[in-house]
Length: 78
Image (cartoon, rainbow, N blue to C red):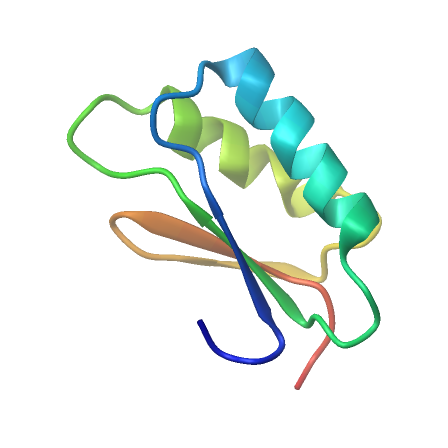
């Protein structure tokens, strides 16, 4: 893990558990964190991926950076 990037592994969680975990991580993220990397995987369906991408409209999130197995929520520019 790189400094300034907080990772959250969502494997094995259902949509409700993932939403609770993401909300908690956004609240916990200090000013030193500029990205929240949500690892959702890409072989088990799209529910977690779609949930992660819903956070584009969150007040703390500037933009999303999507890749096949994870979605980065950019909280501030580095």
